[in-house]
Amino acid sequence: MFSAPTRSVLQRAGRLSARPRTYATTAAARERVRIVEVGPRDGLQNESAVIPPEVKAELVNRLTKAGMDIIESGSFVSPKWVPQMAGTAEVLKLMNRHHGLHYPVLVPNMKGLELLLDLLSEQSKSDVPYTDEIAVFTAATDAFAKANTNCTVAESLERLSVVAKRARSEGLRVRGYVSVVIDCPYSGKVDPTAVKSVSQALLDMGCYEVSLGDTVGTGNPTTVDRLLRTVIEGSGGIPGSKLAGHFHDTYGMAVANIFTALDHGVRTFDSAVGGLGGCPYSPGATGNVATEDVLYALRGSNYEAPGDLEAIAEVGTWISKMLRRPNASRVGRALEARRSREKLEKERENDGGSAESISAKL
Image (tube, rainbow, N blue to C red; front, side, top):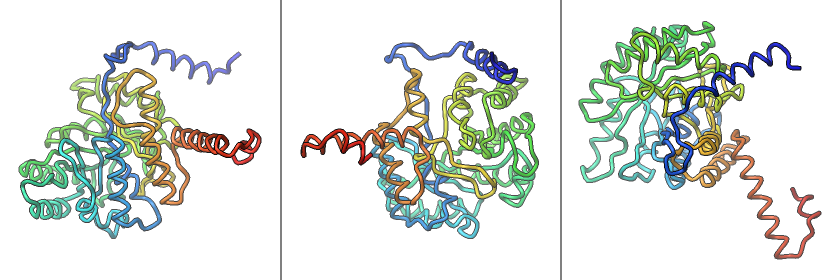
């Protein structure tokens, strides 16, 4: 027999799975999900090692080659506060850009926007622009906003409205982020109505989409469901098509949370190759949900998403080795193990080695 807590979880899972999904059961009718690859920006910003611009540009290039079509490539923030984002202008110049793909950058304030606009003004009109989109960010709590940007949420929204207006006048699209939508490391549980209010404010200033960030990674299907019921289904609800999910995988719940968000009509999710990331202002938070894990789960559930899974997993293996850190993607590790075994089996065929010798090498 199951314990009471276990029965509760199973009952909850049953209610979620009983909801009608909108995808079809044939491959031809798969519903497409947008993936915003945030590894080169959000993924790298909390690394301790110094990462040369050449490596960051190579990461973007490899992700592009692997089929990712939206790659957040850097941010124009103060290197004093986020040293890993120093040199974003050089990264944008070094990386290969392609028509039809998007390379958004994070811009926290007007100073950052001016730096970006100066960079864009150097380009010829015939060039593929360094970027056609910026991201702005705020938080759902004053405590987190003060720790991150030294101002209240209301003050940050006032500043960002000026940034968004100027960016849009220059032909740039604007995407919004809201941090700590489930729990705040400084003030605890977050009221979903506060998330809704901040999200609506970002949309009102011209953001085409708002990404809801479980920055601490404590969310689970129940808390995410509660959040999205308030934000989407309540009075004056925001359509799921205007929202994105940004889930950190601290407790291994990120993929489950994505499927909860799918049930609410959300069709855009942020992820980072190799599960890169963390947050310098959120103690204890681990990386973003791994792009490899998201793609594997979506495609196994009749959703379509961009990218070649095998190629992206190889990028995750490469960047993890470059950073001398474990690959945080479960799917990435599994595919790497399979590649290693296939390589050893090929060596066996070539040199007549035994199965026992292969097992010993593994």
